[in-house]
Length: 169
Image 1 (cartoon, rainbow, N blue to C red):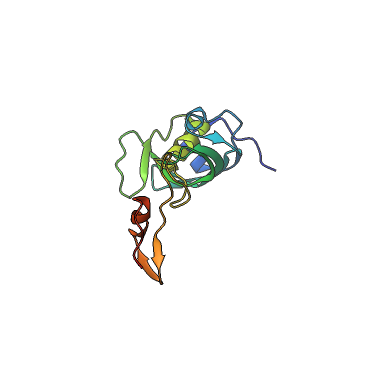
Image 2: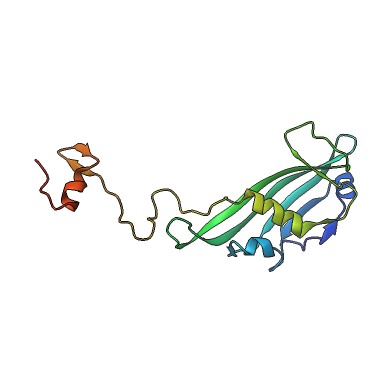
């Protein structure tokens, strides 16, 4: 059974205690994500806060949910999983990254966990919501089919029939 998530925490304290945060966000906790997608399942959270170096806290883990979106190619709805890996450092206000990880200044500031999770999900979401390639057709377009004559591929073979001409043998 998942426990309720804390609303807020301070990254330095959470890292010093090596806190693991497991649970699900309450319904309505991700209003910005809901602007682009309809949530079909609770947002699951699995994060570990741990100290890193002298003055840093490393947050690692996974976030996930199922969402319903609108394909920007065919304009039809589709359901997909939205999952993201989290690897973020919290540091002092004047932190400079010495790794490829993102550093968020504010190691001693109160962190709203729901907003942090929502930010990470939005960063992990596709920039343009689309069905998988080849599974949808834009409105007003017919599916493109290649003509095959005697085992030979003829990419423009359909063109003659569309123009009302008989296709050569």
